[in-house]
Image 1 (cartoon, rainbow over the protein chains, first blue to last red):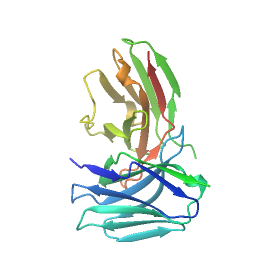
Image 2 (image 1 turned 90 degrees about the vertical axis):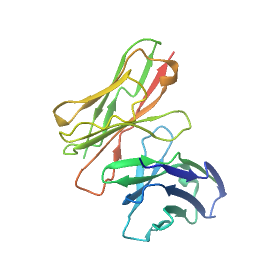
Image 3 (image 1 turned 30 degrees about the vertical axis):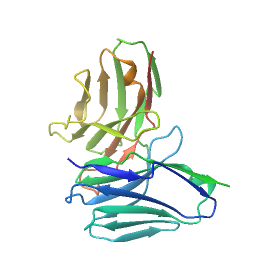
Image 4 (image 1 turned 45 degrees about the horizontal axis):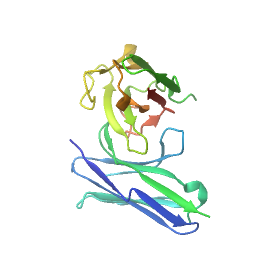
Amino acid sequence: GENVEQHPSTLSVQEGDSAVIKCTYSDSASNYFPWYKQELGKGPQLIIDIRSNVGEKKDQRIAVTLNKTAKHFSLHITETQPEDSAVYFCAASIDNDMRFGAGTRLTVKP
Amino acid sequence: GAGVSQSPSNKVTEKGKDVELRCDPISGHTALYWYRQSLGQGLEFLIYFQGNSAPDKSGLPSDRFSAERTGGSVSTLTIQRTQQEDSAVYLCASSLVDQHGEQFFGPGTRLTVL
């Protein structure tokens, strides 16, 4: 089955700096790659996603890149703000079979 | 509209007792998932229901865990003879099968086994 690796497990940045989280996946048939943000005491919420036929997608301060050949994808957050502090999960999906990375705890220091 | 709801939000039980956790998916969502999230850990897949197909139970950690989905809507995750290592947050998510696979998560049930 699919195996998703996520790095780093923790990330601390200064407010205004950029943050990058990287994930790799094992199954080349995966075709959907969402990123979820989980705040304390809440369920994960989708923040951005990308399909396998696209190499990059951007939404305001958040962008995701996908390299299908290398089977890795990354989340980029620019101009980080304290409210970006949360746990971020990547996932890879074949149809509706989705597997998650272990998560990255992002701390943005004011 | 209403999102995914889960009940109870918190459950404290004694070791050896059985527990039932409930998930109400978004109306019309035919796919439903259960995950377990241990403290500070990632999302561990448990089980997946899709329409009337046989569920994918490949993530269930032991035969003490089982889940049902009645009428294609509400789902119940049952843990029998609970152990302390079962303590975790149990998350439910639902999605539209024919869409891009986006999963909508509930707030979770925090289970504590004493």
